Amino acid sequence: MVGPYLRTRRGDDGASASQSEMRDVEARIDEAAGLARAINLTVAESILALIGQIRPATYLGKGKVDEIAGVIASQDAELVVMDCALSPIQQRNLEKAWNTKVLDRTGLILEIFGRRAKTKEGALQVELAHLNYQRSRLVRSWTHLERQRGGFGFMGGPGETQIEADRRLIGDRITRLENELKKVQATRRLHRAGRQRVPYRVVALVGYTNAGKSTLFNRLTRADVQAADMLFATLDPTLRAISLPHGGKAMLSDTVGFISNLPTQLVAAFRATLEEVLEADVILHVRDMSHEDAEAQQHDVELVLSQLGIDPEATDSLIEVWNKIDRLDDAARENLANIASRRPPERPCLMVSAETGEGVDALLQAIEDRLAAARTTLDLTIDAADGAGISWLHRNAEVLAKELHEGHYDMTVRVDATKRDIVVERYHGVPRVA
Image 1: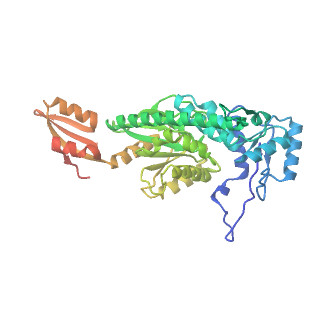
Image 2: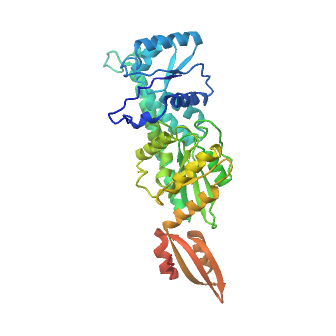
Image 3: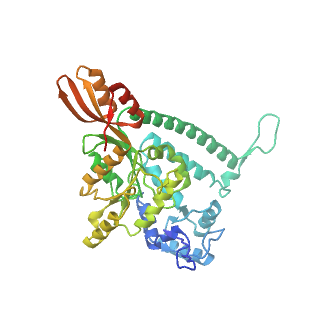
């Protein structure tokens, strides 16, 4: 594992030149090693290679390339992972210099996703991302790519080179996958439309990989989604119903974890899945507050959300969930509590432990409050004989109270803005004053 990181440049005010340099280099290479171990690779040695500039040919300088070649030979390594994005030429030159297979960060993450995708949708999205990545790697480094085949008819000529044929085949496959994913997006839109016809709203979990999203998902839904202390332990999206404190229901969506330098191919390929986040009524940003790079991880997640079209600073649907507080000592917990108490109401954060359940009740209440803020509470009086009308309310609204009085029901319901006018017109509902 090689961490070829640019030396931190600092401005005149002493601040880092870029947000990406917030992350400690030791933590970065430890994360990269964790990615490798996530697909059962044995990391023989991790090498930090701080560089002043990126070399176009090999990314690293000649001296560092020769030094790493000696380490590879001594360890008899079969694979070198570069924790950066390599161009096709850089990857080919390093493989020649080291006489071994070289994988960059994008290729490693794609390999993990390829092994973890279980559903048809997940497999389609991973394959699309992989082919887009592979297409740029078809360079003339193997002899089979230089073969030519004859043309057809009377045209003659050398015909199509093997590299052109491979690119064409990959292009055809990408087109087919994109068409299949359009069907997936259409199916998801139908599912979302179905959920909108009932009084269930969507709560989406987002966060850095290994922040504890799946553990929290299991805690809130009493499900058994795989949860492990491993990067990208779960990949395929999952939806389950959760019960809110006052009897209401919501759908909880567990999405793929984010990571620093998430390949753009994956953000594009997983857009069908991540649309659940765009459509969510509440977004829970789960953070691992016990991690030394919690602030940098927060920035990475917000960067991906911005790429999806969600402004973390402007949206009023985001709630930060400060997870893994059970791993903190008393002083650290008190410091976090003080920070949380000073947060503005429109940017709430909840301290929880998905492992022990601490703070989960307060989180559920916060979810219910946020969902209720976008709904209207109405007081109704309905004839007890109107069974169809009462049934419609139970299907399309959240019934908060219902009492029978001399042949009629006094009901208090909470409805979405889309159904408010229907309820007011049909049942003569009176909005409740807060």
